[in-house]
Image 1 (spheres, chains in turn orange, brown):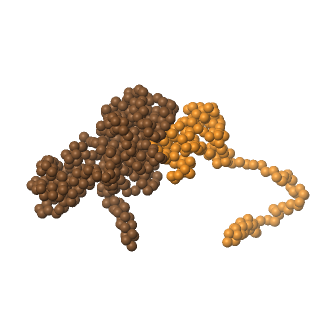
Image 2 (spheres, chains in turn green, orange):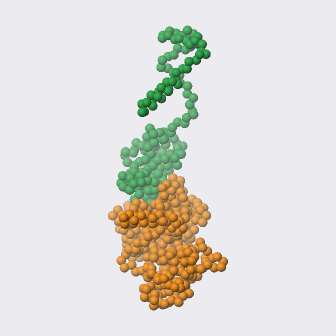
Image 3 (tube, chains in turn orange, brown):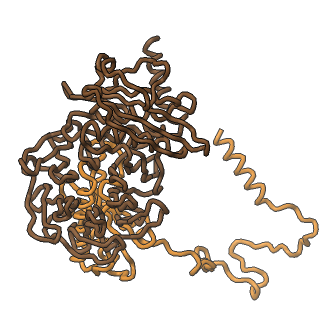
Length: 187
Length: 429
């Protein structure tokens, strides 16, 4: 069925491309070019060099460039680091990620970052605000050690209030023990 | 078939409250546990005149007294004529019905269209008239008047002030919506003070019952607000860099204790309700949070993990060296102090379960008063007799109440949604 549709579409496309016979057109205007032979009127035609096309760009300056931190192909679009139970140190496996964000912030001194620390759901909500704060403070400290300006980053806590996974087992809890990075415009 | 029918009845019962919005948004189921609980048998005769005007008073009085866990309703036979507060009483007859006390009353319409509720309380054992009250009220004050009758009866028979006329605050999460609700102590009359698409936690009543402080996440970070209930006006009380949370009112209503991370790490501060005058109170390398003032305003109880694990501490309200109060187990949090200042209630983790415990500050004896699983946010009634708390039943957040000695347990079910963060309001002047 799909093959038939493609075939029909292709035929339609080709039909659109084919020139309709125009009886008004004078045969004399149609030039016949022979392979290798220069055109009859060399002064008004240019030789076509195969493979070279001059680019005319009408979009320059009109399409906003995609910000690196929203580019899915860029490490900066990875915004979460995860923690073991009762831990708030940044694990080695996230070092490269944190360094990438630090470098980005250093290169863009006007850009602001919000780090939100989270916990799993167990225990007192207010004590979990404190634990989440330890996590976001730890990440901010690491960024500052990597040369980021103190006032470029605010570290806060959402405690257990905004889980990434609403489940009630370790699989869910391990996804909720995290720090999330937000950039200006996202908060 | 009988099982199907039972299921059908259960479903109908669950949805009934949705059909009757007035005063039925929340329903209470009472589970009285504890062998040999000493309950006073009391007979509440139907208030004369109620049949014609609409049965409101008698049912509420009976439900209030029964819900306190301190009274057992004695069945009242049909009597002709229906007795009123002015009727003579045959005490011997009521003693034979095993009632210790008797309430007789009436409800009538006045010529001006308002209502009159009158009642009298009798001590059947002593054969004495304990007096009563007459109220003049408008129709919309019916429930409030019934609660005042309950308060009177309760206090006369137990010597303790009743809390039937108080209100509770709590947060309900329904899908993406969070609502800060205020309801009567029996769950009726639910009204929304704040609706939000971001979480609300830690509501705290001002001592005069006119305002709530709470933490809102509407700014993508925790911020403390003070919110006037009558007109909905609110102001930011604390929005410093970092997190701002755990508000608690001083007994005179002039200050809030809060936990702020503005200086690095969560520490205790004092701030005025209008947001001015912030000053630091605690200094530790740990998390200091969940402050509460003692009723005399001289001390602050709080949670701190400065010693390596979260425990309850007490410090002078003006600042000074804190004293550790909890020593059993590795997780003791959420301290609350009874209105008489003598008992600390808190959440303790016991074998992985989060439960309510009390610490007698005079004897230093601790007692587990719940044995459930995910208890949170305990809150004393203003007479100190009951503790309201949040827990999880069947995967859903619900409110529960337990007597401060652990003997009486009640479940408060809100019709839909996940309920959490209860706070019992004060006695109102």
